[in-house]
Length: 283
Length: 307
Image (cartoon, rainbow over the protein chains, first blue to last red):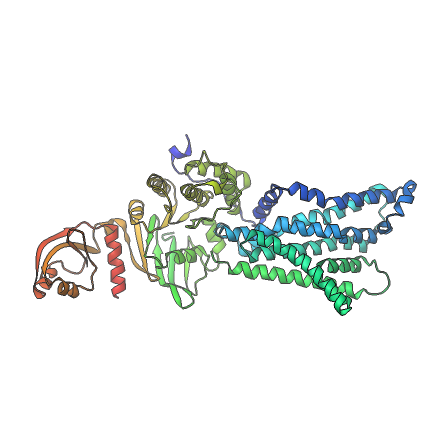
């Protein structure tokens, strides 16, 4: 008998208690982003650097293709390989695109459609909500940084037949994409939490990215000081990459260290802004 | 557990404005109607109980859990149907309902199964795969009810549940509310401006004014005039003076010129003759009128304002 005729009846299951209350937000967000128009295109384009570097790794592992491998200067050492992959301009730009694509509407949409009430009327804290939303962007960013990084290590082992990668580079190959992805994800959801205008959220993320690069280079030219490059998102990522993979050689790379501190500090500032903003949302 | 909600001296302010002013309340099992004029503090009180807002002082429990410290436990056991349109666009009804079930702690498959059931129950079986943003306002109300019911809460808060519904849809919504309240083990609190909705569904009525609970009684006693007498009068003479003498009571005049005076139960209707004599007014018609919820509401608000 349909429930309508039978009348209301109680559900006989039991509600779960979990430390990961945000997990359904994450799972649902992953599906929602994947179902978006142009998602396959964006992800396919973001995967291009990985394919190129895979070819490069293969080439470098084959002595008969040694002539070709010399053409690829970046892959002479593991540190150079990972630094070149993680900090290449195209990948950083595509990470920014993913941050916009996956993150710009996440909180802005809930604020615009007042859906926040639906979340907070469930056994979720505001922190669970932020964690759930943040993890969605982080997931997609890591998909095109950390995951290809791990695959590159695995394929390198398969192609060369030996585990020659140094622990320091290995640690950097895991740590660097995580920090950069945290930075870009926090930027994405911070902007998303500051507006209810979905288009504005997307534009603002791009504007911040492009403006940071433009301003940094403009000031560097005017004042003839490389310190101004720390205004640039691209330059900070690049310098921190050089520092963490130790690709400059020689002594302590101060600029790279400062770039890492700046990225970390900005990540914390962005996340604090998101927390304050979400705490103040009235339901 | 005798009372499902117990509040003691709860205060919540927006700046200088006390939206909930020292509210002490005990709510037992059943269907309660929460009434009050605009700005009375109904929604704020609901939000305090739901844990959305933290009271500046006072304490309270909902279903045995402290509202200040255990609001996640409280939210597990309650369902909330907000007044505002808050559905997440881009999702179909069944996905959204199941998603909200999962957020409440239901296993995924159970949430999906239950989502289908509650959508059938609220009458959205044909439209459950449609995107929620394509729904009419009546369908959105049903969808919000399904979302509030999916995890089978012990206590259901309905904020203006019939808002934006046509008469037929409104009737069906009220039937659903009655069914939920009587068939299951669920307790319901309805906040509504539509007194007829509360009268037809609720067993108890709470009336709020200026942040305070000014009346709490069983619906039957409210409708049987256990707290108020409504007297119909036709008058001739210095009516202004008569009204002046009765200025502490609510008095209204209908289109036929008949006055309806709301008198508290402890005020003898016969004393109206004394007032008429003193003000040289003739009473040409005197009849005790049937009390409606609107009368009980008006009297409670009037008394509160007089104090």
